[in-house]
Length: 565
Image (cartoon, rainbow, N blue to C red; front, side, top):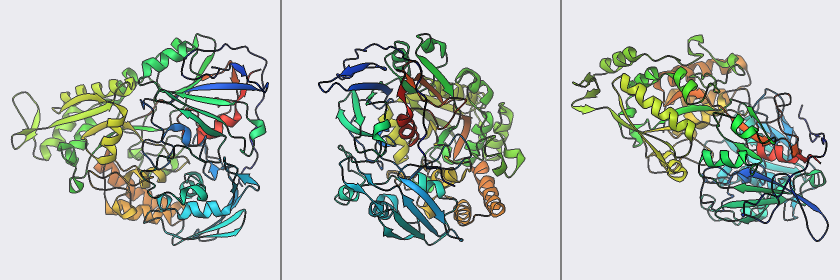
């Protein structure tokens, strides 16, 4: 069954707050109130916009540089899936959905009397348009038709069963207003600076320092919104954002802070840690698609995998806040039933320099006088980048370089700005990157297998120099026919035993090939103003993945928040 009701939150006792002077907008800050001419109170929530500076207005959900506020607060999928738990989806635009017996047909009903933020009706016609739209329906999706039955019902028919793609279809497809997007000539370059959406907020203003969202008067539950204004503030590094939190000038941030007490002492900020997303070494792995560097040799990737001291990285870079990662990318313990071979349950936690050397020597590499490995007179020398200001990832990169050197592998560590990082992984013009994966939104690793590890057979990658297809994340350019065939077979069944057979085939290949080298399950810390706002996800009620950058979930959380007074 699909839960349809809006979560209600309790309003706690009155708590005062002061106006904060960041000088970025005229709005009140951190739970502060500003009374306009009409006498109405506007409550502003200040959010860290991340390291993407300067801010450029881009609310296109298909763009790699899309601003966080677009994904959930402005645009929505049909349903919300809580990635922190194995539980049914909650209706957003959607009301119910039902599969036919073989999984090739999904009948979707949406809530009645919905409107877009510009006041136009939101109907099943928009849903049908969205699913047939080029950006949502690349080759390989298998959509046959999207038939409108009435204003609230659409029937999606596919050429193959879609049981395993439930999240992508129902929870990962941004519903678009046909009257806007039907006029877009190139969805990949459209910046959508004045977005029309169904979510709780609309764009008020954008500057290079911040962008401001205000409550959508046409939102389906507009009368229940407690936060009138959301200001996303651009800060290009963790330390500066941490300072703003400590000063009470940010209300919500998803970031790594090794000493949380430094920001909770102001009496406003509380925090929660929800390890969900894999942190890995991206490797541009596929020489056939144009990747260059010694990391294209599987032996080098295997040697690096066993040379890494994950226990030390967890302790020193992430202050013991991370979880242990499985090379199968099943999230433990949530997804443990999907690990086919117990030997692959967890990646090695201790380094094995001798084992790394044995792998390299078996592949024809030899040591030079300095104890460093190479082949045919060319040493292994790899460039590893991470994002400037991401202190936890930067510290992990330095540790990886030290650990690799112990195994005779040279790694040069550097940091780049966020845009350069984004461009490098999108186009494949890198050797190694410390980066994150988007963890699965349901208790099943299929989403990672298809989006991050599927190859050209499932339209998930492209040659170096070209961006990966919209909605896909195969930055390694990995292309394995066995994996592609197993992904297709798993997508075509609702039989867990059959899926397990296919997952076993996928896991055998990716654990050997290591297109991404697993490091940890990231310490996903969320800091939030618990004094001035109520309704946050907590350990007792983890109703959503809590970081401010969470795609979809941020748009689900904001309507639950109320001022504490």
